[in-house]
Length: 141
Image 1 (cartoon, rainbow, N blue to C red):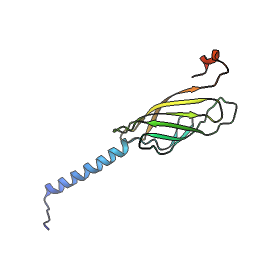
Image 2 (cartoon, rainbow, N blue to C red):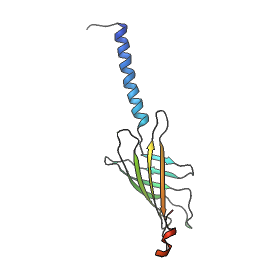
Image 3 (cartoon, one colour):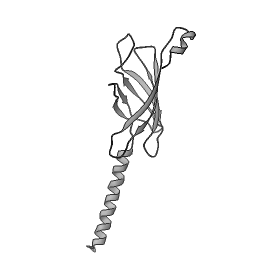
Image 4 (cartoon, helix red, strand yellow):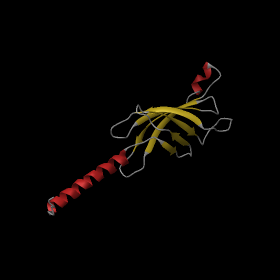
């Protein structure tokens, strides 16, 4: 076998190696992965099990805040996400609160900037059960 020691060949090999490493790092840091534990500013925690090939997932929500009279319990969640090429997916999920007659829905987007941790930005609605249709006006917030 022939051995090349040319500075140009060495430079080319180093450049190709750097490009491969750069792409691996870029893909790794820009991919949002909803699977795992998440915590918000109020101390609530959410666990998302593995997201399937269709973008569906389930898990548990452990809220830190509640106006319910019963003790807070972990509550199941189900949702789905878009499996975007750029990894900054939109998603939505529903939480069926086990300690009240309420349901919450969350929608949001995952952001993963290069070199930064993943962040979920969400909006939510909470629907409380009311005793009659005339009280419907105060049931969603």
